[in-house]
Length: 155
DNA sequence: GCCAACGTTGGC
DNA sequence: GCCAACGTTGGC
Image (tube, rainbow, N blue to C red; front, side, top):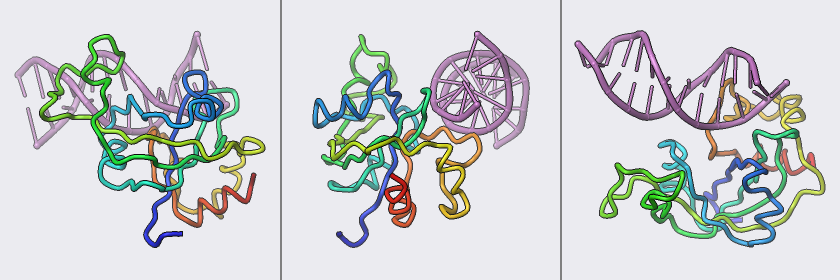
């Protein structure tokens, strides 16, 4: 594994876009992020090949559903300029885009969902983890290598 | 569907 | 720059 490689967790509502959808399409532009901190992770810190935990949020069984990877350099989210899109941002100018994204590529589905409940039960072992912080709403967040490995071991 | 948490907006 | 109002996220 490349030195300095970062690990990530990205949330998606499975009714909108699930790990099965990602498997079907292979690679997906991660459109619609409208939070500056999440954007900055994609714009400034992600590298092609970084591993991504694909997390199902706002559903009956929230948890990590599979594995993906960063598949592109950052580029402007096209939906910000699309008047028809829910993600249209009239304040963003094409010559100075406000919202950036990366493509995410399917790697594999987990045999089963590693649930949020399980992660909470192992909060002590996982250590400081943005996903488990109270009230956390970030949809793109960093995961340490140790946390990443720990979560894989729970599958 | 409820609602706590939290980011953003905009009046001042 | 403060902060109340508002909208959204996401677990439950």
